[in-house]
Length: 218
Image (cartoon, rainbow, N blue to C red; front, side, top):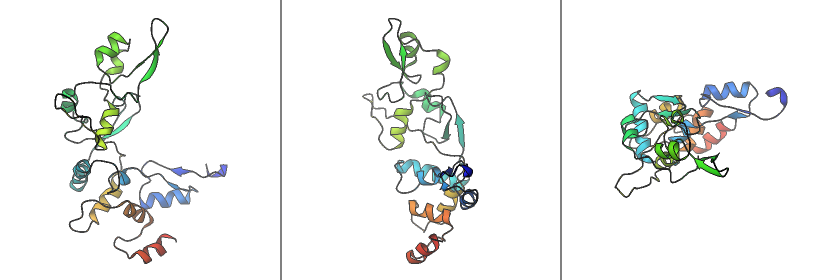
């Protein structure tokens, strides 16, 4: 990659100070970091979900499972196992399937030659009986559209009183998150995104702004 002469970034458990150093030494322009920023104060993740996962991290029992059946697209989502979310089979079983956002619908050809749209996560009877989908494709699919809106604290509220449950996605490596919450001052719930950058650059927590800027520029 470096031989091409174009900038590139490395991803996949590179979101640590050691990972950043390795990437730069290999000629990369930097690293891609998702998980550490996802649980920072400024992220769009709903605060109650942040608290829930950060408590799991602090207790050392956070678990992430890669499951290609979760997403209607077949993409292997990495899902944080958390009570009250769609990672829980009981929560999934209790949800009434509905496809009313449709961001992941795909086109298919109807018997009359016209184009229709379907999603493996929509109501199974509609997907199979009315739209010709395969039962095997619908097994275990979560409605990612509604779930991720709920994760961003924008859940749909149904007429029957139910609220769409969330689905928390993250990488496997919570090393940086664990280090950042360990450095939190007493009484502070979340670390700022700035702390993620400082952590990756090896800037000590609590360093004055002037000293931090000087160290970060080296």
